[in-house]
Each structure stands twice: as C-alpha cells, then as structure tokens.
Amino acid sequence: SLPEDTVLIDFDTGEVDCNADRYEVLKQCWNTLPSGPRNTLVAELESLCNDADIVPGQEPIDDQIDSAFDVSIPSHLMDGGDDEGHFQEEPLDDRAVRDAFLRFLCAVLAGYERFLVVPDADFLIS
Image (cartoon, rainbow, N blue to C red; front, side):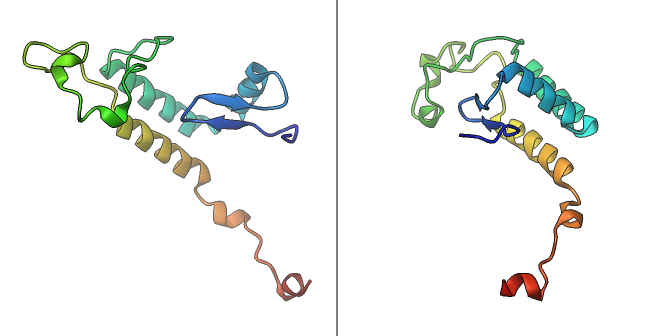
C-alpha cells in the first residue's frame, strides 16, 4: 500500500500507481513540477514527436514489433518502407527522448546537496 501522497510512474509500461483518482493526482503533480524544466521537456518531446509524424493520442506504431528484434527484421518487411527498404518518415528517436528526460531530471535535482543533512557523531552512535 502506497502512502497517500505517493505516485509511482513506470515509464516502460506507462502505468500510474497511486491511492487516489489518477487524473487528479497527475494534475496536482504536474503543477508541482518546476515550470521552466517542465516546459522545456514538453517542448523537446513535442519536437521529437513532430519529427516522427506522431500526433497526440496516436496509438503506438511499433506495438507488434519488439524493438530488440529491429536489427534482425529486414527493412522491406516493416510497414512504411519503400522498395529499397528505407522509411519515408523519421522514426522516434528513443535516445533523444531519454536524453530529454535526463536533462529534465538534472534540472529538477540541481543543487540537491543543499538539502542533505550530514549526520553528526551522536547520530552515528545511536
């Protein structure tokens, strides 16, 4: 059982786990994120999706092909390829998505050392 103010988000599956209405919890969490890094993250993700011709609400385009097997699947067998096996559109750059989230987390956690409490000798003995 999760504490009342805890939200777990699994980025791999997209699952949100909390003890309340998920929409309300996510709306509250959204407003607690620092607006600068949040807006930068959203802009970067929107740009990456635009580059890959992904529109809001679109179903995953690779739900039937495991990305671990992309190397072994001939390009001409995949949807969207031309006669030479090249894609007409740029695929979503998963590394760029990871980098965008990494930059976001670095921005949010910058200076966290100021909030660490260094234990004193009494704490170590107890």
